[in-house]
Image (cartoon, rainbow, N blue to C red; front, side, top):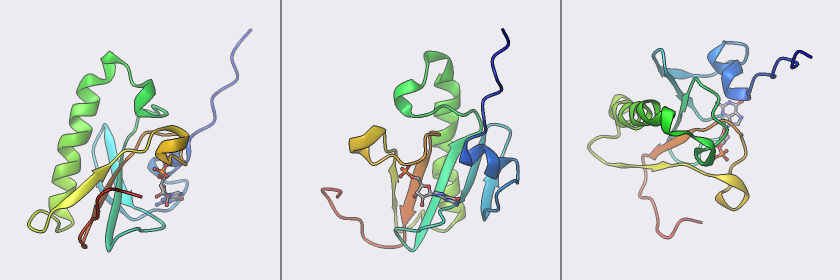
Length: 119
Ligand code: 5GP
C-alpha cells in the first residue's frame, strides 16, 4: 500500500511561500527568517529546508547540512547587524528544551545582553 504524503511542516510552508515571513537569507539548503514572536530586538530563525524534526533525529548523512546551517547562521547574524555586538544561537530539542515547532531550527538572538543561565 502507498504511504499517504507527509504534510508539510510550518517551516516548509514558509519556504514554499504558503505562509508569509520576513525572509532574510535563502539558498538551496537553508532558509532564514524573522521570528514572529521575537524574544530579543533581533530574532531570526535559520532552518534546513530538509524537514529534520529536531537535532535528536539528525543522521550522520546530515553532517554537511548541519555544518552549512551553523556557518550560515554566523553569516546571517552578520547580515542582520549582530557581528560586532555578539549574539546567541539556540537549538531547542524536545519538551524540556522548549521545542514548539517540530522542524529543526536554530534561533539567532541579539540586540541585547543575553543572560546566563538561560530560562
Ligand atoms: P521553538 O520553540 O520550537 O524552539 O521555536 C519555534 C519558533 O518559531 C518560536 O520562536 C516561534 O515564535 C516561531 N514561530 C512559530 N510560528 C511562526 C510563524 O508562523 N512564523 C514565524 N516567522 N515564526 C514562527
